[in-house]
Image 1: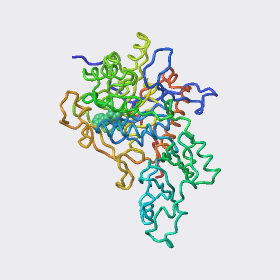
Image 2: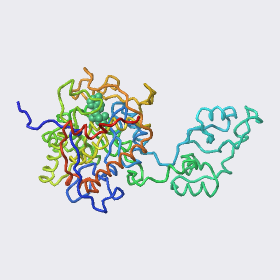
Image 3: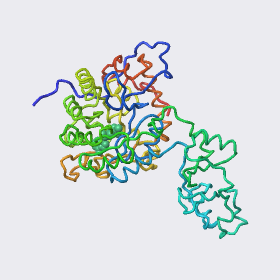
Image 4: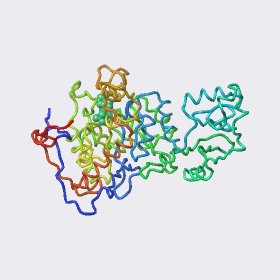
Length: 493
Ligand code: IMP
């Protein structure tokens, strides 16, 4: 038996001591770019994040909607793996197909439908532009359009055929597939249109660009894109069915994988990494989770492209109570970061580390970066936003979103907690909970990033690498923590 000499510490126990802030050290000069996957010293990481955030591999966090919005803002989602292979691959496809501003039509009918069908559809979707295609699908041959200007419900008979009042294709303004968003927007304005259909060479409908969306699709400078200008997306895998899951995800166009497990220091992960590297050598793959340098080395040597740190610190996690396993997130991170740096000195290869779980305050994110994390993975933080899959509910006087652990009975992700091949979840390692609702991801992110940049400027740095080199931290006593909040005043509520 061995007892480590250091105490298991967490973010809440530290604060930054400010550094010298020079005049050019201002938030607009701060870069939060960071490597996602390993690279040789002197070269560049093949994938860099524009903001150091990834969303957790969880049912309650990372579906296609979150993945689209987070990658549009410069981060990355790992689509949850605790679902059938085909549905996970379909979510990946949805993200890869997404093009900002190009909307797949959700209101489609055929020329044989009647005015009554139009009115019913408008009532159902709330959208007044209806594509008329040969088969009534969103990708059928476009034969015309119906908008509110094409019919007068109070005069027209409800059984009037669409063919008799639609605007036919030969009278429509349209653009060809491949048009850029800015060209499409120019056409909308020039031609005074509300909706511009985009069609392929066979006149089949591809998408619409709507005038009302104009403000929201000005391109986001932080967007995380591949060479074909599609958003980047990751996916979680497990050590049970990877031989079937990985080919399906690769086929769907996934950019990066991550083995999702509460315990990464295992032969199953080693085998999985070796198989993936042999069969999909160009698809980067992360592994974990670990909490010390020994386990980092083990996964590094097995081929991991990044390594995830954190056991038992997640907000919904009860692993430490159930199994007595884990380590304070700050201690785990600093220990693994020392080994990562030593590994770089020995091999010339830099393997990024991800701090996963336990972020309760925005400043904890900056602390995690200063302690050596290249990027963060967060569940609770993202679960609060509209884009997370959990339901929004009104509970005890406030709006909340549902947030449940992968080790809870609700998710039953036995693959994450049981690498031994048996497919049962014998006891829970996570809870089913609520988190306060926080609105739109983009608004929340803006505020969080502003805080991180402000802290970095107070420390006198404008990059994550210099934050890691120069940050000075102090441990805080319980009394100084109390001093840090509003105290000895009567707060107006
Ligand atoms: P959070 O950001 O503190 O909410 O932590 C999220 C992280 O907790 C995830 O990325 C996982 O590593 C971990 N996690 C997810 N579900 C469970 C669970 O049921 N039990 C323990 N840990 C979990």
